[in-house]
Length: 267
Image 1: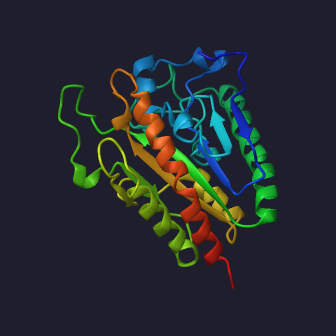
Image 2: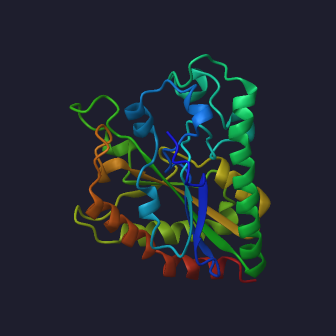
């Protein structure tokens, strides 16, 4: 259910720099009008959301945190696909009581979608006016889908951090991507060096595509999928020490990325 006192999303921190962390699948809230149509069990919904991604981005000065669940409105899909009307649009999960959803219910969720991208545009327009910028688009992904007691997915196809760059102009900004991967991969962690690879499982979706289309010469979105080794994806229990370790590792990449970004846009 929704926290009726909480807005669907928040833009937080200091926006006078050129780095942003977003957590657009972090939310679990659902407005009452949509909740009446929702049949997906809460544990299943939580397992497909990205809890604690707000905390992974907490050390980046400018932050965007979404509190509304992706199962009400998915801000990482196009507007036409943002509300899951049928199970086919949600990986086969039965999300709503009587699909397809009534369009009046859909319209209420799309108001959140439109408001979010309007606000994001206002903030990034000001940032782009100062120069190139980087968005850490933070997500997480499951790697134990076969069950709580089943083996985890193979490491070869499931890096600790997947860096999605599918819509990025790599000819212009490839050095920024490389600098990020190197910097994050060399951060020390309790479990050893982080396995950071590009476009193995995910390539990024709407937030990245929208930003790159709007700011082709200024915007760099790195769609970051952190494997849920920082939590038990079946119980929802998080290792907050590990989450904070990832937050420090991410923040430590900023100097190297900033240097590469400066060089990428220098004539």
